[in-house]
Length: 326
Ligand SMILES: [Zn+2]
Image (cartoon, helix red, strand yellow):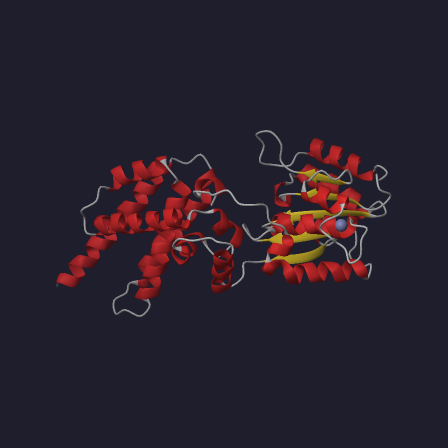
């Protein structure tokens, strides 16, 4: 889901030391750096909302802090890294309206990276999201990875490393970051003063701690409840799929689809133990809904696509009621 669709709240800045689920990756990084095994390229494969960029920021502090044990999180280098203002850290990301990282931006980034460092220490380049590199950009980056300048680290952050060329992946030290268990995430959110129906919000948005941290849990829970009522109406033939689809597609469409998927997933869980649960039909509906979610950023007609899905739901619900009445 795109982050803009989740009702958000402002959060104080957090760093890697606030994120308990990053601790194993931080330990691995510290050990690799201490033993000189870090290499010139790091691939951070992080699920959305799990802090890939926060971990990369901590890696810059680990390499650039001149105190022991590094990073101290307080010196000028650590603070500049946290403010994304360190003169030896460079970032490459999509620019303008493009969703891809272009080759000209990549060349400029690599040119900056190979200049002499300000502090005489490491120079670090961060590519985010690395799965947005277009083929020419990836090729330009690969040339630098094949012959990396000394004391240079390039950190690639991505959610789908399979979209990166194998030739780039094979040159990287890999780190995997996933969401912790739900109970641990909810405990962390509560400890940070987050309130509301967190469990319900997690059922809709998933367990990624930073996604939940930014979400207004009660607003998400409210939408989940409202969605359930509306689909119940559709299933018993009382709702108007066309009107509903039109209204839902205008506002917070991604969040609405997430609510629908949470509802349907729970239904499937319950159906698995119910007689005549009609699991195959439910899974067909779930596949169609997931396809809709995948295509959310393409110029599909949201309203028509959702209406089609709701009619399918309505047809199934009424067929079910006929079966039950016999
Ligand atoms: Zn420091």
